[in-house]
Image (cartoon, rainbow, N blue to C red; front, side, top):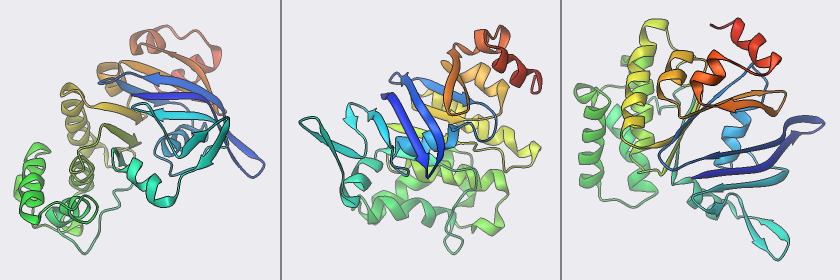
Length: 250
């Protein structure tokens, strides 16, 4: 579903990604771990072309992201064509980014109606299904300010799912939450993974990574330092940098 081939990204003289290569199979969950500033979130943003890569290639479901290839040259897609690609990729951010002046239900139906042209009654019925799925069937008419952080994040997940994405990206979805609210969001993500959704998750929740991920990738300094099945990376890390990082967490 996702193929990254030597992906590089710089902001001026700051090289954030230095040739990241990895693959995520259809229906797999990949968890990205590593210290702040290691490039995890930037990589995630490159996958749906919120950031433009400077070198390398990124493919989602066989499509080159953000560019078209003609001969041996790459041409950046127009904003309209890039947005079309992005419709199939759901993203959940650290901060929930809900529209504060719209109810939970209205937050979820906005994109299907405006972007996909769905009929309102169809979008509303689907939004209610999704609210039930994330355990918020009774909060359809609540505004974000009336919801806890965990509830807002679950609405954000439902909003992303309303576009029927083929891939879900999660950028530290629990890091802004009070500890007692983390479990309810991770529970929704576990259910999503069990349903076969392909997911790339930037997280510091090692228990979740151990339990749910098919593949665990440790990044530092803009490169993939170590990757493998979670039990091996967490239980028997091969690289000194990985051991040092995990010793502070586990």
